[in-house]
Length: 400
View (tube, rainbow, N blue to C red):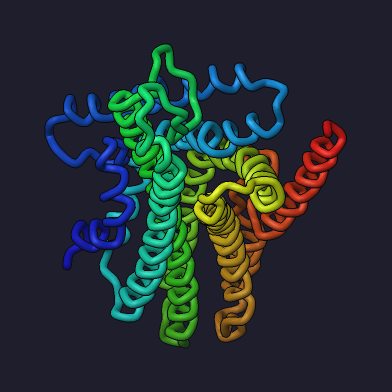
């Protein structure tokens, strides 16, 4: 398959998620007005059907730790992160042009295998992110259905229904069919948010693995060039070969700069939200196990565990892939050091000092330019969240 087909094939999971809400970075049809309407509708629907009503609900329950925790963690923070992801997606169109050039470029069979393997890994991680992202609203739906079974069997006109998402609406919704319509609207909004949230995560995975594969190809080309140089190779050919290596390296780093500029603010929002969500979800899990005595407790625990799994795996993917890119950039400097540079003419050996120096400067993805995203940050977030959890439990004990 050609370059366009290969790129479409390896990004199909994130594409199928994001194109449904009109936020795929690359225009997919000539009817731009339709795509623009789809984007605006998705953004406004999510904002006015869920984010704003939940904001009003948060002001109503202000001061009650349990209710505030439920409102913030279940939807408000994830929705705000989803909105931030929607905003940044359109800045990636330039990156797709560069990736398309990578697939169209003439490659050896070994380089093509490297790209295919990297893309397959990115595709699998993308599928995992999207699956977990959609499993969370489904688990919430199962939880709400079992929680409201007794209300549906009641003959009362006004019932004690529990909304799919705890929010404030300026109308009476505690009766059939208004309750069902309201919950359906909330589920659609949550479904769209999950598409934006998990689709962006999947796209980031595909991007990171593609760039990782390009670093691998860069090292392969460097070894290949050095091994082919002999006494018959002209100095001009050597200069051209190393000029190609430097330009290739610059091309990869420029792509990573685009990723950094695009995802930096979103990662900061997600980092803060992840810290709070992990803490609050663990807090709600403790309350569910120690306090709640209702029959659907198993479904409550199931939802919390699914939510915790997705949120933790989601942020782990970002930290793992960011660290992978950093290690790949260091590996380029190591490749320049361990290759057979001593077989080159003495005047050309100095090139390797420049290559090693360039490779020693790591490429870092950051959260808002404040902190470097890596596995150390992931461990720090988990540790900090556990400290907040201890604080919440202490406060709740003091209120009794």
